[in-house]
Image (cartoon, rainbow, N blue to C red; front, side, top):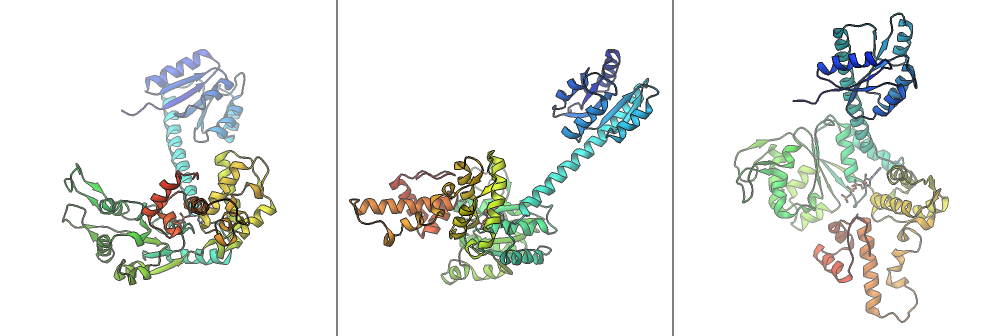
Length: 466
Ligand SMILES: Nc1ncnc2c1ncn2[C@@H]1O[C@H](COP(=O)(O)OP(=O)(O)OP(=O)(O)O)[C@@H](O)[C@H]1O
């Protein structure tokens, strides 16, 4: 059985309140009551509240004032005004002020029920509308790519060109440049916007799980497969599948994906039955796929299928003009989240940011703004609030042996360990602690990174501590 709908009756006449409460409870509603307008305000916080029935003249807060409060705090809750016979004029004024309906005393129980049912329908519509609006603005927010420089304009143009079609797209660019953000913008500005968006990171999922993750499995496909499960491919049916770090997909899965791209069909793990999907594929990589093809690690035919249209997202150092805008957008977003009063950046802080090379690109910039907010006490972010590596002459130089301080008593091994530690912490910070990406930035294997983390006792979580 569904939950009873919640109504609030506000009337200073005790009898009237009780009569209405009884009639409405009998009809199956949950009824809250208040004698005064100001008591009613406290009840507006009830999340289930759907409709308010309110007298016009009451102590504390008048019906008109209560309507204004409801419009402000619970705009999706309609108000039915109860008026005494002869005060139609004020009822009309209340309607103009936002009430949805009015009842003139005395009224029949049927009139009351009818008015409540209409107001409930209105409430449902208004709530649905608000949810839709929230979804649209969510979508707009994620589709909003910040940046006005020529590189960003070109990206927007490309997104606009390909979004309407089902063409497969390959998005390339260094780690953290915004490849996923671009893919998402393509999905959200195209005709599949209200269909699923499913993202999968080919390097983050262990190899042995990748096949079932992508293609799903049927009951009994392997020990422990107690029931069938849809893969990401089918979850994305009708929408977009984003394959991040496609260069890390294992060769057997490359073959299976190729079949999906060629025939639009596949079989889940443990089954020969053919399933068909209608999915738009956007793949992304920060590796050189042509090089991987040359090395025999990536199928050439798959590369051609994916790379029907290529979008290159340039590194941040090639579009420095966007740094102030991006920094301001992140500050705006994060200060609200973190409850910090910072209002902007000093010119000195902006100059430091403009000079830094941002090897971790937009992600590193976002992290830097987050770090700065942590240390910024109030007002504007100063250069000293920025992470050391962003400030001129900081970590990046210090780790370079050629420019290191004059020789002192530090032994070579300690010095090397310190340089190694700094470099690793820097890479982890730039990649949000994602070890596979950090290893790639450092040019070492994931295994080697893991050993070094243990050796140097570096703990990794979302905020890296070295
Ligand atoms: N132009 C942009 N405007 C606003 N935010 C952006 C922009 N580009 C990137 N970002 C933000 O920067 C962060 C990193 O972006 P994203 O994850 O899209 O990068 P990526 O290139 O896919 O990274 P990776 O290669 O590591 O997967 C995200 O928080 C993203 O929202």
